[in-house]
Length: 508
Image (tube, rainbow, N blue to C red):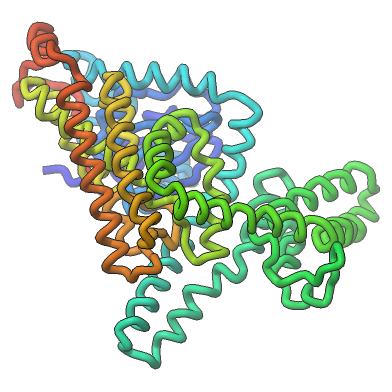
């Protein structure tokens, strides 16, 4: 039996996205291979979705994203980049994928799952057109600054959790200071990385962006007074670093457009650091510090005062925010809260949307018991959904079906209200890093009540989201004639094992 490897998956992917000449940029986040393509029409969407290992496909503005799952995506990206560097040689998986479509795919019967996949593709295409607005483009660029930082946030967050657990248990007192140093070092310098990525994203010199942003965390700023108040190292945090590097990028571009080459090499970096650095010290750090403080105060007040209602709204609206691309605006807010308080209190509530999605998919699985193709799709995508990778279930099941997407939001709202209620009662739940959700968030949980109480509240929220999402979808999400409509269509008949057809995505 053919076993998928990162190289075989990458080799199968490359021809399906149009070959090496069609790929202009490659990157990856926690779960997705993110490609910028020269010609979108050269992509074979149906074959991509049928490729073993592919959990889904998402289009987000300029990028074409292949969902592969946590862990797998990094290895496949490395193999994909190696194939690009080699000119795409060997771009076949040796298992029937020839570069255009799976063998026999053209003759495959179209079942309900295939029809839903096409429906999901149509919805995403229309959503892409709606997303082409200045606001959403700006949000995507902000996401491009922070998403590369997520692996370090996760690693440092887990180390911080281990250090906290050992401290509470009074175990290994000699090693806990070392663990605390390892977990805190990145956060102490995160402004530099934000500045580097900001300049890179907006067309400046990355190291100049990092140099300008570094002033935010330099201890010597304590001797500088702005608006009659002495600055504090780290004041303004990632927001100040982002603003500083963005200003530095514009100063750099202005200088390069006006200075002759002989002076450019000396004056452009000098003026970039000097002008944007002084503005950062005397304006941006103070202003960004006020904004960051307001964000932290507002988040804490929201949950401790109106926790259940806030959780209901946030948990219920997060899936639509994801669909609209507006969730990217939350990334710098999460990062600011982590920098200020050591954890973000918003992420565990927003993660409840994924629990509602899982419950809704389970209800579809039970109700449409005769639809073998759709049930196969759900079985393949459900493990990823439990770990917080929701795109396959959203775009392959609930969103194309319509009402199950709304009932999934109901489940997310119930789970969010559960977590928010306990925040009002004094047991707040936070996450020390962004990126994971679902069960994968447990190692990153933090809260004032200790890890056990925090995990209990978060687990209770997930269970509430599963149950309410399932019940809402089972009773209200499909309609009384759902089973009969699928049965009458004749599309639910099982596909014989020896008949060719698209292969379902294997779970990762």
